[in-house]
Length: 356
Image 1 (cartoon, rainbow, N blue to C red):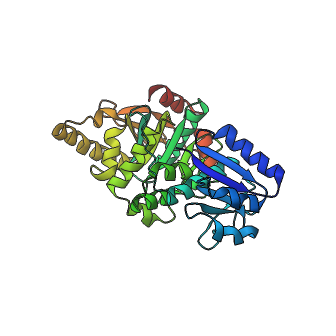
Image 2 (tube, rainbow, N blue to C red; image 1 turned 90 degrees about the vertical axis):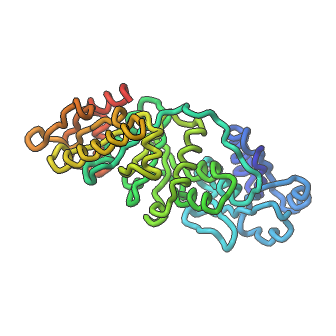
Image 3 (cartoon, one colour; image 1 turned 180 degrees about the horizontal axis):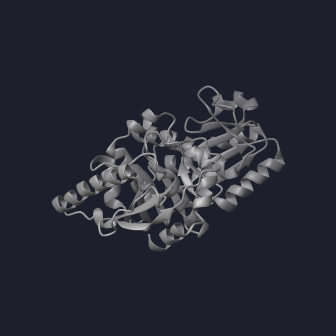
């Protein structure tokens, strides 16, 4: 089923441009109609079954004449304009793909029709970067790996499920929606969870797709195991990605455990110090015991990457216990983003792309 969209704008050049884009890029998802005359629009729209109407705020007086099922969205000229009263807004002068995502978000909020994501399972690889010991660069290594994959023409989605994550420090995208919007959609029992996810996905210049961190840490702390499973299942079924990388806290229960069970590989990060290695060994012991009790294979799928490693101050855990994928030297100069970009070019990242 296609989303039916009408656009009312007196600027014929803009009107033709946006219609042409949607017809070329989203003809399988959107049916779009253009109007430059409000009287003609009001006459035709009654019988058109339009889901969304894009129009200038200056024409707000026509809203009382719209069919009940038609959701109006005001086109504004600034990126920083919030919703106007109860009505959504979208900046008309931005990437048309972002306008499309805004339409998806509005549609998912207003329709009763259920979009079912029926794609097949197991069409992508899930890699879990499990944060056993804090402060060792788990996110840095995960994103360096994601960038390396994207540079190798893999379709990559990155998800940070750490409660106090700040993925926007590393990645930049121009979609305003975040993981909070997706969680709200699920909690509100909206039928169109996938539309909410799709409309909230940002794309970094490196080619990595991701969801921005929640508006507050509390949103993520209150996420239930079922809600996390819904999001991950929808991403896998979408068939949009070759790899889904998940930055997840270490736990042997709840949604972290569910993700670890589904992951093809589990990556732990250490800096090689006695303190961190000790934590990883205790965690690995617990995982091994669980494997014996529950007949799982978590320990066999676990690998270690050493980050910020120095042979003078660090030690490597016996590879007979946990398989070692290699070490990353310490990068002290540069922003978080610059360090990630430097790391992706070293040998251990090339090895990870080949093995995982």
